[in-house]
Amino acid sequence: TDIKVYHHGHKHMRFPRVTGHELAGEIVELGRKVNGYKIGERVAVAPAIPCGRCFYCRRGMQSMCLNLSAIGYHYDGGFAEFMLLLF
Image (spheres, rainbow, N blue to C red):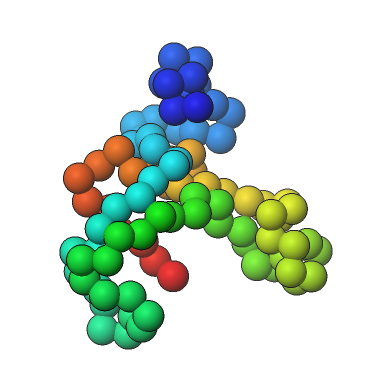
């Protein structure tokens, strides 16, 4: 998908943008309030970011979110040496 977007663009993407919506990596640093993860742990990242406010999100159906955004399209993605993820 990223190669297709590179060559043909995407309606939700504005450049400049770091692509890479399918990503995995290793945790190198954690915030003070982050629990359940440890430095050195390998992780996969779900790129979809539901709004949490729409009809579907309020009913636990975040995959149907009307305002869904995604890492690699709306926000810089995983084709970078480092990235910051907010939870």
